[in-house]
Image (cartoon, rainbow, N blue to C red; front, side, top):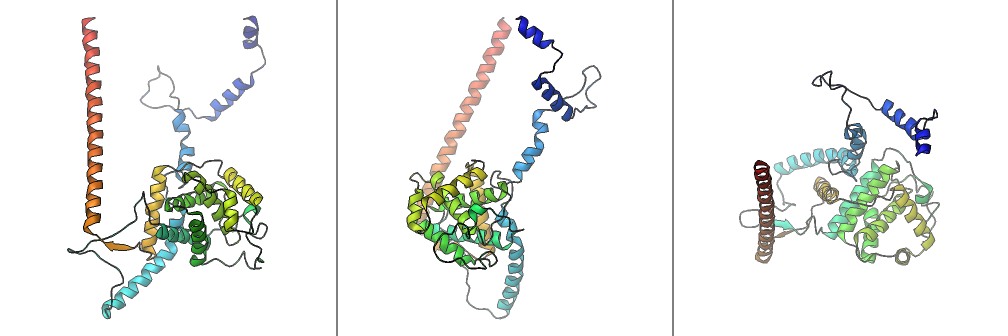
Length: 345
């Protein structure tokens, strides 16, 4: 059409064309020695130009499975000191041997715990999550916070908030009791506790804030509230949490949940690889702090159960291998048919 042609030859620049030229100027064009002069320059692929964004994503442990979790990094200073102390105690125990406090497997008895990545032990998982939050608060970089999470401005109870509420770090037992009360009252699962920690670290990374004595309760409450709705099939409503924390209003819960989601940029996805990484990092944290999962001798009944589960997994992977081989053979046959048709033609 005439209008479109006149638009194309118009002296005025289109905003899209101008923006495209600016983008091309900003994107570097590199040449390679392998490319001859006749072929011209080599334009960088878009995936190469987006590499800095991917590196930034890898630095976020709540999104990428290869990035180390924040709580494990923050606990390393204390862990090194504990290892030195344990070494000195071990040396003294060798000088004066006493009773063993840790169970070890032998030829006649095998000790295993009942916690797996798909079915973690509830009590032990909550203890580990509380310990991770404790290290977050203790070894925080600063006191960056938001008003919506400030317990002074949005109290969870009618009791007067102490004047030093923003200075004194909570103990591990206090954090554990707070989380355990919510989980036992709402009947939440251990998997929900792991997802809670994922959301908590994602909030700290996305919002560029710190969990500190003045906001830890409301941040943990918001993470539990969101994790219970995402993970559990029968989610606990906000009004149900108001029955547990009787002095908080539904409007306050809704407002906190809305802010939490906005700060997460509505990214509530937790990949299986990220979940597994947090689970095993929590187990490493438990081992470093002598929070061993409860060990029990392997009984005949449980041994038979483990053997049955192993047999099912072997059959499953064997069937997957056979189906993959059939697909490969069918693909080879298809290539052979195409080659035969090409020869005949």
